[in-house]
Image (cartoon, rainbow, N blue to C red; front, top):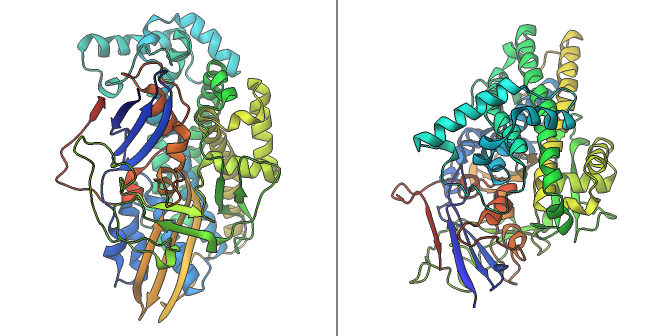
Length: 557
């Protein structure tokens, strides 16, 4: 007889996500529903406002992805206005965006997702000398690696455990059979978990140098950037580079080795394709390498059904959203230019479960040509690998060689987690290049940071880019110089999508099908796979209900 399991909320940051699954007598998941439980509404607030104000408002969708929405909105306006920023503005935007990627990806692995792989309590029984030897197998110069350092980490952990106040390490499933890393491996990653707290802060400081502040930067405008004095000041560029070098050092000596370390213990999950999902992948392209956005560092395209022998061009006209199973009015699949956000909440059934085939989430259901698509670092790396992207292919091939895994292991929860780490390396490798280009431009006498532009009487535009969590699009319609309609289709909406009219599950839901739980009372495997997408519910629904007082709920039926 099937059991119904509800994990609510499942996220560690930015909004509430509820995952409901059915498992069979062997504890294998046979069905799943992804439900965002808070409402979306900022798009409606934007109507009637000056388009140039939208960027500052939409970054309030979220407290983590602030720059992501800011830039997408500015790009949408620039498309509608028919204006391109000068080269210096493009480079400064790339540098701000790079800081977002670097600290966001580091934070995700260590503070939002790492504890799905790492048994914190197990680290207390580790031998620090063996941990040093193990760390040196994955790096010639491992980060903050010494017996005394590891002993100090164990002492800190022991105090946490003995106090009974585990803080960030509370409410986890320590000792679960699905944890596979050795005590020494756990100790290494826990040590870097603590180091990453400071590294993430340094990454945020990088953003503030050109962005003005963090988390909500304020230096972008339609046509360019306003941080003229910072851009032309060699000392400010030097401050950015100094901090960047610290973050890159951590990425290369801690983050990448730790992912390889984890992969050595979880190889079987990659080989089995656990957490694979829909196997359709989409990317819009991000980090422009020329002033016309003709070439981007991150790829653009479509891969269907996991077939990496073919990459299809992206047809923006095939992007739609529908709300058959979402708490909104309407039945049609609409392109974002014509999208609507009209709430219609119907709730759950009397037992608190989803109502069978009815509405069950505040997330809309984005589709490309009628099909669900995964977006994010894994999608970008699969598309880039299939396209023969030189840097992406080299990173993937070297990682597969180091781990002994086949390329098909990319199609898994492990592959999704590894792709994010490899992408961090890719961004870091190119950030220094953008710093150099900016310096050379200024030395050559090019000090332009803005292109003059005016709001058109009417028009429309879209800002489509790649952000840490995936493909992000903002669509704007302008009439009488103000916003007539505004729609954002964000990465977590693509990934957390509910079923559509045809009954096709979204990526979160499909990724859980076939997963076996070691212990239904501790659904660690569900959390691990969902966290691998780096969910951001605030982005997908935009605002919260201040009356909600539920902090955490989990039940097995």
